[in-house]
Length: 470
Image 1 (spheres, one colour):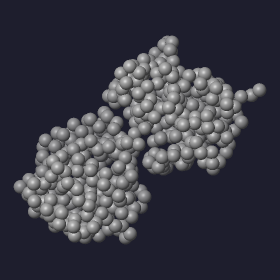
Image 2 (image 1 turned 120 degrees about the horizontal axis):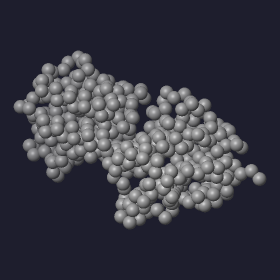
Image 3 (image 1 turned 60 degrees about the vertical axis):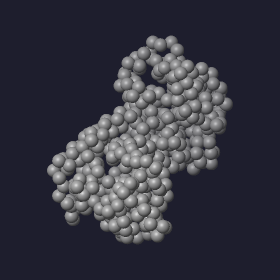
Image 4 (image 1 turned 120 degrees about the vertical axis):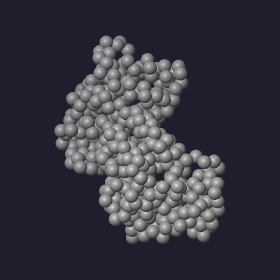
């Protein structure tokens, strides 16, 4: 096991060497090694020369430097990119935090109970310096506000000591350049439903005369960050940014609309292919005997396992949708197979349908949720990886090829089709703004009513198919 200790540094000439030697010499749990990822945020007081000397003398230190000062958040963001360990631990270069707390910070992660651990300065610890009243009050107030918007019960959101599984941390985009990193990562960890633990730590806080840098302006900025990332669901980076997963995360009323449409046709033994982070699974699995949520991506598999850790009727499995042998390992027979926003991204959608048909009982049903209206295909589809949009005739032909016929077909979100067409075909947009999606979600009740009267197709089709007889 390797822990990457991420150390942002700015103008810490008087304490940097002593602090880093403490980090290098601190005890770690048995079998755990360390690497130090130090990002010098353009120090101007001689700190960088000290860091270069230490890095030259110890191969465990990897040193990087910003050409201009960018802030703690920017330094941590870059350090995350360089990390190669199993876990990432954020450590300031001052002497406020005690590296002897590393074993207790790492223990919940090593035991497999946690995805993230926060070190709290306000839980009972062996030794904690008495802090200035107003500074402590601001920290506790920001933690309380963060808790209200995150729906967490942390005692210390602003703590420096945060430890994450590296694979999860690398998948979270960090936008804040300064001290907004703390509320941002907390909000995103909460929205991602990570398993967060708190442990008490020792704390030896500095006064401003001794070099403390955070101030009241950073407190106001933290409030702004909390509100911003409460509204905006910016939860995945790069290859983990599958558009429909992010959008569904922030549109619970639309998810309810979709699941209300699907639920009446579900059986008791269900296979969901491409379950993502479990937004639909969590609504569909209720009162079913056996619900199998599958994914091929390791990150989403981890999210699913966390989400359904204590849900006995839900089984989480790795399944590659286009690999027939993966289906052979599933329990049979199943009476329902569900594809939600999966078929349209497949290189060979007919192969996926054929694979799913193999595990269905003779009376089983295929439930497909796919993008509708081929004429609306454009830049938005390219952004989220859609290779195609479907008409009713398209689905009929593909289902007939694997021995199915359409039993029911629902056109969903007809009111959204002109908006999708305008963004994707006329404006050539790459995304629909997340505040707009929030507004759409809050007014879903109205768009459900509109679906009854509008004459054109919807943005989405929900298709229920059964085996052809005769």
